[in-house]
Image 1: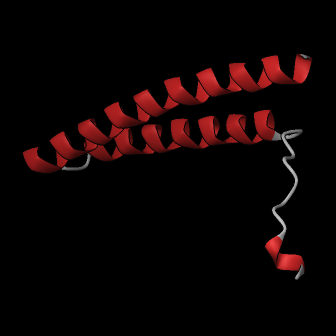
Image 2: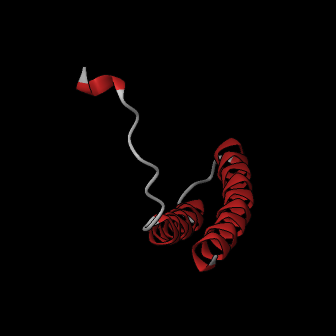
Length: 75
């Protein structure tokens, strides 16, 4: 059956996809920062700050993965 075969490993556009994810994450962080100005809730402020901290960690991981993928395509 055709659906039992795994898809071939196509890493040709991984760097571009990861760069798009970085850009999207940065945009989300910016929107979250803007929304902080519109809330008086300390709980919501802390939630947004915590989420943006996790986003910063994700950005670091994305950038490391981009570097790994770029090195892989050079080989």
